[in-house]
Image (cartoon, rainbow, N blue to C red; front, top):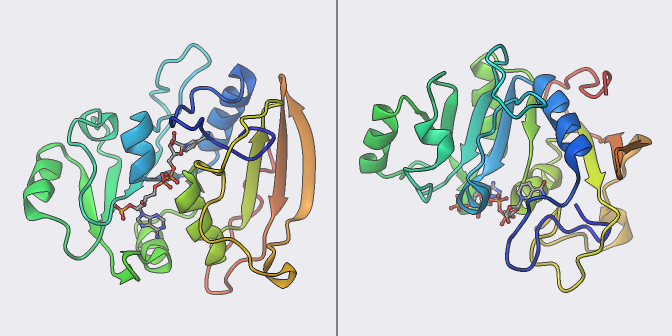
Length: 228
Ligand SMILES: NC(=O)c1ccc[n+]([C@@H]2O[C@H](COP(=O)([O-])OP(=O)(O)OC[C@H]3O[C@@H](n4cnc5c(N)ncnc54)[C@H](OP(=O)(O)O)[C@@H]3O)[C@@H](O)[C@H]2O)c1
């Protein structure tokens, strides 16, 4: 993110706020997890591969990273990289109970799995999704954005550790793409305290890691950033 907490410009461009060293560090962090998860808006905006890549930019054939995309009602384009480049069969869509059957067939033909998860309000119930993902034998998930998804996980206390990268740059303007969206805290009591935080430099950028109090119903991954 920029110093003023934005993950994209006002036109939605997010490549690249931080530099090459930070991107390499993100690949190391992906390597430490069994799965990565993003919201459908990130797929629509960036068309990411959500793989572990080597410093040369090639997909690491030895890395097995499950890919989850929150897509309540089927807005994901069928041409998205995460769908069409699914040779390893590790892409899963987390959809709502009314996920369109026609799109489900398209997903099946691409070898993409669909988890139908109950809603909380109008969106995926994240605690239910977390339980299903755990049921697949996956114990650590890296939530990599965007801002709305980050906010939902944080608001529901489902995050045990954070890792924020800051580029020494200022985007300015209103927060169209904040690192953490949602409605935000109302009072000082609602602020989310980050504990055991650690600050480091990565290339020209800064990296802050820290621990958060989690919902007691979840198993906490033992310090996922220990090796960072
Ligand atoms: N700089 C970075 O590191 C970075 C990383 C990631 C993304 N980005 C940028 O972030 C922007 C996208 O962020 P965004 O905040 O607009 O969207 P987002 O968080 O990527 O996706 C949000 C969407 O996910 C779906 N969703 C399903 N269940 C949800 C739940 N429980 N909570 C929240 N969302 C849920 C919703 O769509 P449905 O209702 O249709 O399901 C929602 O609109 C892009 O511009 C991208 O480039 C930057």
